[in-house]
Image (cartoon, rainbow, N blue to C red):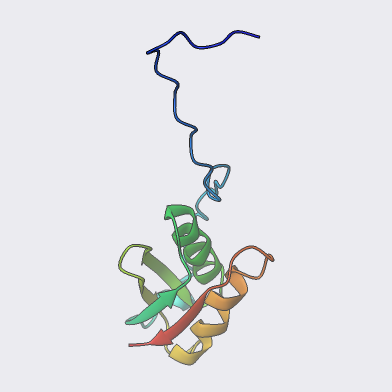
Length: 114
């Protein structure tokens, strides 16, 4: 076994991140004409996001729902701006979508309307 020479620097261990192998592709959605008939925005405060992939996971869960047009999710600020059709969804309907995005045993997300 090789030993470091006196005065030789030993590299520090690289910290292991729980997000190291965490990658998720964005869901691409073309909203239906019915969804675009009336559009409004709401803002959610989202807790539990630790990295950009967490934000993507929440975004994908939101835009996968019929009636949601688009969502911009910021994991640093803990907010999501959601564009949706209010005739198809109520703002409260968005909250369980955020929670379901983290329902994988490793992530837990919660949302409240702002």
